[in-house]
Image (tube, rainbow over all chains, first blue to last red; front, side):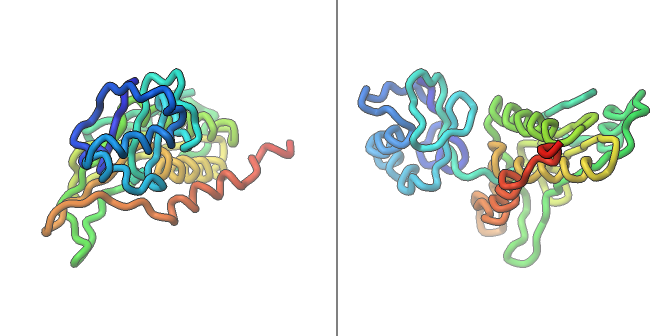
Amino acid sequence: MKVLYFAWVRERIGKADEELRPPAEVKTVGELIAWLAQQGPEYAHAFENPAVIRAAIDRNHVKAHAPIAGAAEIAFFPPMTGG
Amino acid sequence: MRFEVRLQSEDFDIAAEIARLTAGRADIGAVATFTGICRGGTGEDAIAAMTLEHYPGMAEAEIARHMAEARQRWPLLGATVIHRYGRLVPGDNIVLVIVAASHRGEAFAAAEFLMDYLKTQAPFWKREERADGSSWVEARAADDAASARWAASERPDAAE
């Protein structure tokens, strides 16, 4: 799956997007965040407070319990501040 | 009827956008517009510029979803939302919401609805440049409360 990062999540990780193949036991958005947080200090920094991280699957907002099966694109970002 | 969402780096022309919505129409009795402008702030809050990052593809889709929701709630005759991205300086336009309807009530309400959802649900992030560096703007609880009240409110046509 393609994973995208925006705003300070992108800055902390140091890249805007990447292709990821998480292990099969990672089934939800929340589990993916927990797995990503273990992928290195930059990821640990970006996901140090999972409660503030927002996610979208295939360009729709989702909650932490949403399943990731079948997702083509998952995005992680901070709370939005447009308008 | 014209319902349009645009993201662009360049400025917009408010009068021209209203004219595009109302051209050739005799049924529109009210047009409400909201313009969000980059605020410079004062003292320690003074900013030199802001940069708006967005999620291409999702930002348009999310605003379009809210526009569809607004059309379910109110009998709208047209709407335009334009959101800019990139680097803006104080005084620059950021966002434009125009809603056309038969009467002012639904035009005002739908414009406010669109803005409230746009602030909290459309994937945009502001980074502000100040004299001592730059930082990401933090989301405001007041904006979450403003969009949440629409979820709690009955649709105006629900009783009909």
